[in-house]
Amino acid sequence: MRTGIATVCLSGTLSEKMDACARAGFDGIEIFEQDLVTSALSPGDVRRRAADLGLTLDLYQPFRDFDGVDDDLLAANLRRAAAKFDLMGRLGIDTILVCSNVATATRGEDDVLAAQLSQLARLAGDHGVKVAYEALAWGKYVSDFEHAHRLVEAVDHPNLGTCLDSFHILSREWDTAPIEKMEASKIFFVQVADAPKLSLDVLSWSRHYRVFPGEGQFELAKFMGHLARTGYDGPVSLEIFNDVFRQSDVARTAVDAMRSLVWLQEQGAAWLAGEGETHRYPLQLDTLPRVPEPTGFNFAEVKAADTSALETLLGQLGFSSRGRHRTKAVQLWTMGQARVVINETAPTLSGPAISAVGFDVENPLLASSRAQQLKAPVVPRKTQADEEVFQGISAPDSTEIFLCQGTPDGTAAWTAEFGQAPAGRSIKGASAVIDHVNLAQPWQHFDEAVLFYSSALALAPQPFAEVPSPTGLVRSQIMDTADRGVRLVLNLAPLIQQGRSKTYQEHIAFAVDDLVSIARAAKKRGLQFLGIPANYYEDLAARFDLEPGFLDTLRDLNLLYDRDAQGEFLHFYTATVGSVFLEMVERRGGYDGYGAPNAPVRHAVQYDLRQTTA
Image 1 (cartoon, rainbow, N blue to C red):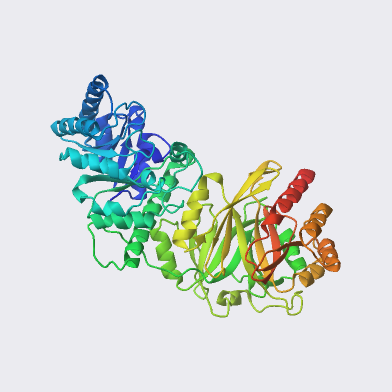
Image 2: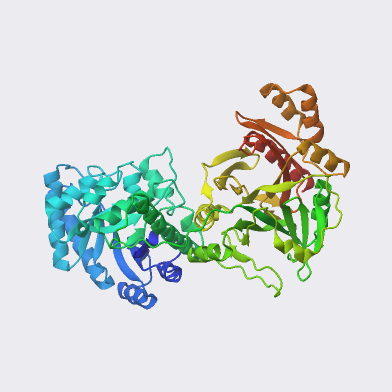
């Protein structure tokens, strides 16, 4: 599949955008008119620069408000078109995007529209260029892709075809099956975009909230399957209007964009396979090695210059120290199958922060290969000959992701590199696993992270939630496996000020069988719990008919509680060290959530603590 991207998707100058697209591996680009108008590069310079970079110039866009106008305005529009056709000749671009009129149209009859488009097509033919006519979802008279295609068929000119844009089709919830009936030779161009489903006027939705495929909720796999069946073999190009992308680093946005098209091809191929298709179409939808979803967490790593506070915290919770690694400056702490690595190589004065997460996978080499083909950077890791080799990749927020060989019993062979487990302070019979890891995402990388974890690790995004906090709304995106063996929570969190530095708070949650016993033992060891206000327990008593003695236990141990039709959830939080705090949870019955009603309480208490210690 020939890949493309519109320059409007990216930040920077036209030259910077072209460089980033070439480095990311795109075949071609669309030149957005404003990018050219504001550029110091001449059309000839752009043409030569693209050739040097190995990029094709596939489309000039947009040409607006041409059709459905009176005769005087039509004449002016044709003069304007001729000038643009001449410009395209100097650029070396043979196709222009013409949008259905949204502002100046006064005539909506199909015969009028077809007659005017026919004049444009003849003019384009005289200049040796093609016109791709696109129905904007908010077009005044033409807003439906099938209507636009009927007009193209009515004109029946070799220089007039249609442009299919997934946003304009799927935002209106049009059925994509009719695409298959279109003659491939009359589809001149295809643009794709995803988007979250919002209750918003379609113009605002389009201009600010488009995202790359895989980062929204549109059914793009079916769109690609129907497109392939037409026999179309031209570019599939991204056209994304997004305020965040146009402020973010141009190079990494281009890589994210390319990742989305790799993912899109695979999803389209999977949809066709699900329909029983075995035919190879001209639009070749390349696929990657398929890997099963992770089976569980192998470990979580926290990096700190001064590890003493974190060591104390883990010991108070009941974790056992396994000592230091025989060749690396890291410690291992365990409780059952919950493993925490403390990395002592943090920069000077750096407080504890989550630096890496290990996932159990069926085939680490295959999973790493897939991730790298999805543009994930490799994490270098030095190992001795007798040490386990981890396959590492870097997530968008720079968290290191290690792909580990899973075992049926949940053990990890690499722990032997720390020697034999000493007698620890764990409660007799206590066991734990990592229940979930909560990673705070910088605002400019949130959508990128969702695509990264879903495409590279096969985690499924769930509907996101917004949680109120004293510093603003926190957007929370759960990514998990079907059996919930892996639960990853991505938070688009408000930036927290700590002293002179800014940081995000993140946490690791551990599931245990008897939270009350864990909490009581931790209290005796001097654990500093996150103190829950009395008002919370009064509200809890009003919401749930709890036995008084049980409520007293919750209050005494600073435990939080939630319940739904499937079961119950108990949990508590520790104080924060650096940017990390820990959570202990107990799931009873079929409870599958995270205690969402309690999240505002946590945020408020943590905010108060930061204010008093600042």
